Length: 386
Image (cartoon, rainbow, N blue to C red; front, side):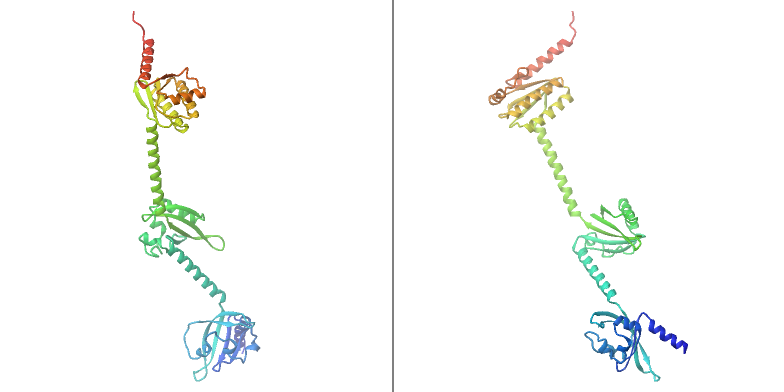
């Protein structure tokens, strides 16, 4: 008697809703948990029909079928609780037999699973969203556990990399990519709790990677989730653009060299023939190149041949005078030749004084001046024989 009483109390206090109904669907037993979960007190439920008190939406014969079915598959049904709000319940059942071995009633055991189902549906929705993203973008979504074993490996970019969906699952990332020292080190840092972003090369492709530690409830890292984006096309475009920029830079350097051709016409004599429009920017390049050449060759004379120059602005004319003076500071003499009439008018209009600068009508006269000057210097430095 005491044992039976204890069993009754266990049933009453069980966390699951426990209900018994007979062949006519009349409720014969109803524990406290059933009242708490479904909202109906025991007194309200006893004597009611299951299909009326707890109708299954869309399936009015659901409770009756349990009398004739005999499987272990739980049923998940939606019920309207007392008060009108709807909830999902998962029911398991057991047939209760009479003395002749026939089913006399059914005992059902249920629990509310609304939150679990919603979480399950939400997780499935998240999975569908991630799957949609990874299959639309040229990317790979992957994850590894603490030991570096792949637990997730999917994405559209796997096809281009020559890999199957999920091919790495169950394999060790440190072993698969042992040759990538940088990649292994980045993964180790992520497993140590350091989120990171990196650029790597693998499977013949360039990848932009984001690696994020997966943390437990107490902050401990138990894995890494990674997102790898195939940036091969962008990288190749960048490399191609960089090569084109390098080519343009080399071409510009050639143009600059051609626009400022330094010619050594005699031992110790440099000439710089200038052709076309001479503006301030070009004159600045001329100064840099010519002064460097004088220093490098230790030239004594530098001839600026302006025969091919038709127009100079006022600022440029002043700059040319400063260039000649800069040549003098290096211990050489600047000589100007081939000044056209309009250029001469510009210089005069500016009031620039060329009295201390050697000027000649053509290159030949300027070169003769330089040779005579070097001969005099040579004669002065050579001891005279008696």
